Image (cartoon, rainbow, N blue to C red; front, side):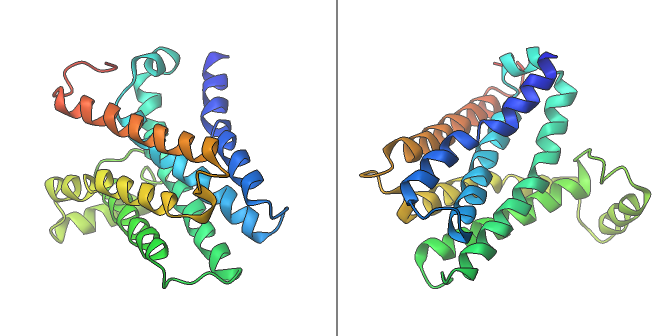
Amino acid sequence: MKQRLTYLGFFLTPFIPVIFYVVSAGTGYDAYALSIVFGVYAFVLVCNQFYLASQPAFLLKLLSAKQVRTLHSTSPLLLLALGGTHALLKLNVGFTLSTTQAVIGLLAFVLFFVGILSALMLFANTILTKRMAFAAIRTNVMTKGLTHQKARAMHNLMVPTGLLVLAHVVLASTSDFTYNPWGMSMLVLWMVYSLLSYLNYRLSGRKRRGT
């Protein structure tokens, strides 16, 4: 039961900042509001990736280490789908890729795609990677020079990419602190905390899981 509640909380808690952002936008229930929903939810998933990678002690008590790793491996697929839909909806309502914020968002999406693809290719363990067809693709890629070390290096780009996503969100009009202090504060604080948790885990040499 506690595991089900943990998974439920993982996928429902992003709606807390989503509500603040949608209310602050004051646009009603249109394509723009939907783009905000997808964008904010995707941002929280980015933060969660760093937090899951840090192997937090309390989460390991609720889920097994294997379940935490599986959640970390499968969430990026949802993240990419939400981020891509967010961008398409913004373009559909008239936004362009000519602004600094949009360029930063696009760059972050491309880097996330590369990092997630590298993980899928070599060390992620998901339902997708267990399929024989994907295993064949993975073998073909490895024979062409993508080593485990190179994939790791590409995957490590996720930390600076997380900072790019943070910049993208902070530059958004809906992040104006004057009318959306709670929503913006939640996102910034969660990103900072998640990144610090992950960096602490890496700097500790991964000797103590869950600390």
